[in-house]
Image (tube, rainbow, N blue to C red):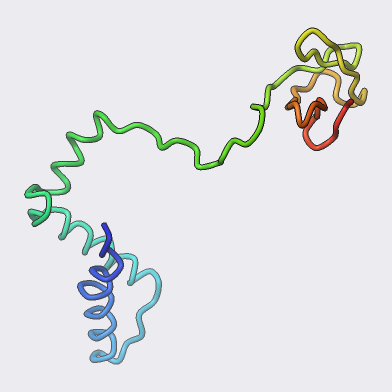
Length: 126
């Protein structure tokens, strides 16, 4: 994975651009994508020297245990809590009720405590 860009450049891009120059035909994005797809099919069907396996076959077995990546968004401070604005134009946080603009009645809003103040999005309510 560390050398993927160099590998793709040496093994795919340089030969593709060289052939294009020899033929005197400029390469367009559609042809480049088709060549890249064919190259991926080719290299993923061959035994990889590092893992001693064929990547296409390895992926089939690994798909069974793969999980989504965790969010890369760093959570700083208190977590955001979603609350529905009631018909009295209030949200409840802890044991208190906080008034919000009436236009938000019936919607779900993000509530967070920021330095002791209860905030609705970027607007602090108290």
